[in-house]
Image (cartoon, rainbow over all chains, first blue to last red):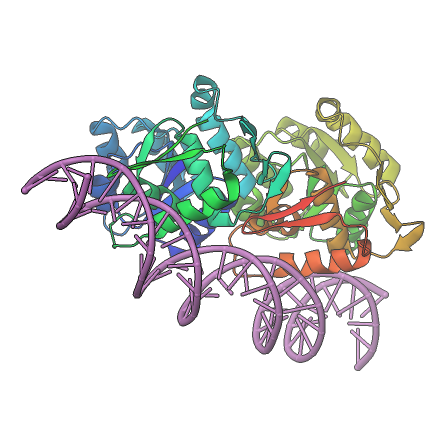
Length: 225
Length: 225
DNA sequence: CTTCTACTACAAGAATTTGCATAAGCTGGT
DNA sequence: ACCAGCTTATGCAAATTCTTGTAGTAGAAG
């Protein structure tokens, strides 16, 4: 899933990003409220994790702002405060769940699962751990990819890229989108890493007769099953 | 099962932790009430064992606090007092069972079994006491591991780690997840203890031709049978 | 059909990160 | 104080990531 983490404390954000990525999610980190409203508001996230205490804006305010702008993405609030009052006001203003720091990572995971369950039922393709396209087989639980029975050794970045493409199967995704989702880069810094990694992937998962990644010239790439 | 023991008397806590671990449970010890509310409250325990006499807070108060915070984990109270009054108030405030010290370990076990019976029925796969993977043999009842008939001497931490990996057999578990489940650490990701212990475990339970623990690059580790 | 341009593919190597082993420092229980 | 077990620190090899540079290609324009 694509998750936006809004958190200015480096320790916690680092922990969150690392942990969520290790669980197979595509995570983007944003360190202040303003940027959320400016840059990230138009991206379709599966989940937003929002710290209630931010340097530039109260988390509740941001929550309100998002809901006002008709962003109905599930939002999970994080807080160091353990007060009931805060919890209530967060839920009142439209948060979907609330978690106090420090928390157990497995609990975060289970709450994320609960929050996005509806979504998962709706799109029955994604929650499957096992995916297959022709000769290509992906096991998301074991992070294992096989091609015609033979194991394919992908680096973490290559794997992430593949997952992103597969999650957007049939849709053309731009380099900027890929950079955003897989690398967490939000501005164009004139790099061609995406091209390079597409090339790596192709060399590893495609054969002469079996192609999965298609170039859409001037736009980006598309995965076809 | 994952059990939290809240007890400040070393003699008793040691006895409890050792005994429960020997019965194949994953036990975390907490020596004061404050830490329970701060650090351990969001972890999904299967059972909490709570001494009624703690240095920093009355056990009943802690019990109340937990229930107030909607923690519905089964709680078993321990007390040196034999007074009926205490027993009643503990049960009134939401404890699920009550046991007076000194007690026979067998009684504790049978009460734990009663309290968590539903849970045990639910997960019929895990409670097996005897596990075998190739040459590797784990007896959870006796807390004993053998490799090709030869006894393997694991430290408590090593054993806990092994059990966690085995319980997630075939699934990749991240370092953060391991740190959470085996160490109870929620916010420190600048440590390499997990790596070190994986290394210890491997040196003790693996041979040239027999491998059980597989590294999933950039993600974590996976146990394969 | 040829030329041109913008875009794409890929190779090679530098820089960084990761995983692992080992060693050294700590800690709590006897 | 000692010992076993736990944690932190360090160094190294290998893997991964990313930049740079060049060759190649599709498609528009002449």
